[in-house]
Image (tube, helix red, strand yellow):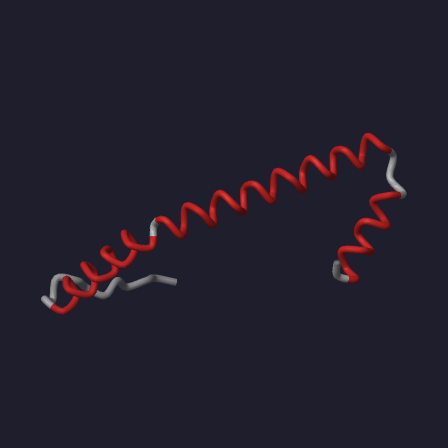
Length: 71
C-alpha cells in the first residue's frame, strides 16, 4: 500500500461510520466504472484501428478538408 493511500485510510477511519460507508461505496463504484471503461476500450481497439485507417485513406484521397476555427 502506498503512503498516500495509507494516509487516506487513516483519515477515513476518523469519520463517522455512515461517512465511511458512503466513502467506501463511492470508491467501489468508481473502481467498477474504471474497470468497465477499460474493458470496453480494450474491446474497441479493432474498431478504432479500422476507423483510423478509413480516415487516413479518406485524407490520402483528398476527401477531407481543414476546418477553420474563429476566435
